[in-house]
Image 1: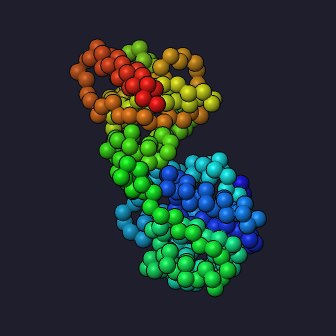
Image 2: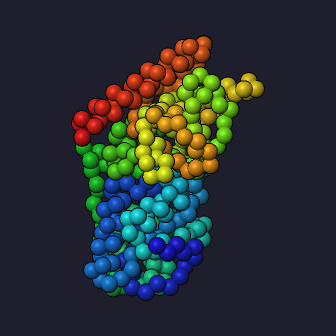
Image 3: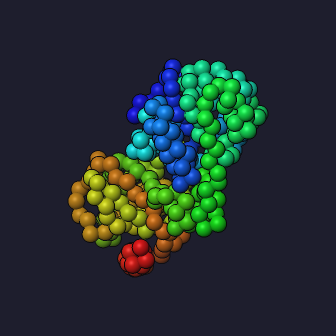
Length: 308
């Protein structure tokens, strides 16, 4: 997959438009149609992305992301997209929709087809939509495909719905809408070994920047290390460090695992929330609770495996 950081002439393309945060089940229909039409017309599949969410530029309310940009690009490559064009939203935020269509999409990409979701909006003052793309398709010689709403169990699949469920700790439903388990990933770093001192060694990673922050608590997770997956208990919250200071901690206790993985990249996929963060009066009470957390994960895994 080619990643372009500026407008580049690419003739005969099958375009997909959208921000695609999460690349959820609805997004995948858009992307699959883009790939299908590219093969049918002998063109290249292209996704045009803004690096920053438009809401973060236009409003003071920052939209937290389900995927980091690097994660999004990696998933687009696995899906089979040929080209991704990364643009700065600030450079186009004042363009009228008709001008953006003519002077950017048509001029640079000569699209054979354009695919969007049903609610795609673009151009100054959000004036461009599926009606405009449909209206000008015959003028500029492209086929326009508007993907209808994608619904699972009477729930509209959307990035905002998924963000809400992640914030609530409802990963069972969030993951169904995504089509995969929400994850964080990073390099294992050396911590203060507080968990090891009470018999539950853990791997520490930095919680990714520019990623939606989950609520503080303990979670049943799947941890991928060198393409192999292990069950685990993940803790994200505020702890008392060795010097008495309170600090945020992101750590996973990997079940049935005892290898040294400092410096390795791991992927932690969240399956279910076990409990909120709790302060414990003694070490013994904390140890007892961690054993209960592990028991919860074991029972949940057995239930999930038998239901699948």
